[in-house]
Amino acid sequence: MSDSSKVLVAQGGGPTAVINQSLVGVVLEARRFAGISRVYGARHGVRGIINEDLDDLTQETVANLELVAATPAAALGSTRDKPDLKYCQEIFKVLKAHEIGHFFYIGGNDSSDTVRIVSEQAQAAGYPLRCMHIPKTIDNDLVGNDHTPGYPSAARFVAQAFAGANLDNAALPGVYVGVVMGRHAGFLTAAAAMAKKFPDDGPHLVYLPERVFELPKFLADVKAVHDRYGRCVIAVSEGIHDASGKSIAEQLVKNVERDAHGNVQLSGTGALADLLCDEIKNQLKIKRVRGDTFGYLQRSFLGCVSDVDQREAREVGEKAVQYAMWGDRDGSVAIRRSGQYAVSYELMALSDVAGKTRTMEDVFISDSGTDVTDAFRLYLRPLLGGGLPDAHRLRRHPVAKRLGG
Image (cartoon, rainbow, N blue to C red):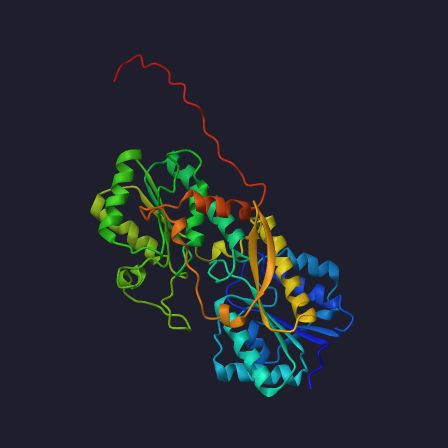
């Protein structure tokens, strides 16, 4: 039988700026319960579990835990492993061997599915194991959540980066293309729109995976904006695709790299930005065209963290422990919004979250498909937190010409 006094926590998937807040939330909250004897952490997610690469976090000081909580990326290390039934059976063997009574996994869609399978294995074996999924993803694509920890901080980075890119582009006009993470959901790319302050500010065009991308239409859009303003700032999701669902990156890149899940590698290359820039140069004959791929910068950028995100990431970890200790079922902690801005935390069934993907709702995307709506701006603004830097302009007071021309 299990010794329910032992806890195991792990982190999975892409790191974020606040995932360690959730980790520390679990550790400190679990240590407050008299019945908990040990809190273990698995190194590099589920791979660390099957390798029995575990740390005793009970011995960590509160002071150091708090310092780690404020540090981006996954302090325990993460993994891209996507466990199947056989893999989860191996996880369960290790949990039993170490007499784990409470299993907490911080992660996204795949991580929630892992928790679901392990939970089912424990139930089938009659082993008393409480399994909790703690939400985390910068993609903001977990169903049942108003938003997901990690997303607000990444969105804050994207908004500020595009604000800077817009200022740069206004000083030296041309076309700028910034490619942002997001395979299926455009929430992070859409955050670029928060950079706009004045009517002619960029990004002037925003392309999301929720809408079909057509290269001729894209070029026409860019030309129209460039003709109007003499410049154009563009935010593009890495996951843009054609009507058949095939990614643009896959169509344009000659040598396609795939990840462990068979997905086309989108984040580790600047190819999409380069190819779009080449199309603009060649087809529109615009000379000054520049492109950036934000790639991994947006995930764990130090010093650009939403205080709201930090607080909520800590709380989902704490609430997961409370649901585990006081509740009678496994589940996934979900963030719900109320009022002007307040949140509550509910426990969803693992089957309602696992293997499902949320995409941007239509109400958040403009009719043109190349911008966001005010509804999205109202949705995102409170998540970005306080202390956002602001950009200002000189007021023009033209001096009359004396030489004509």
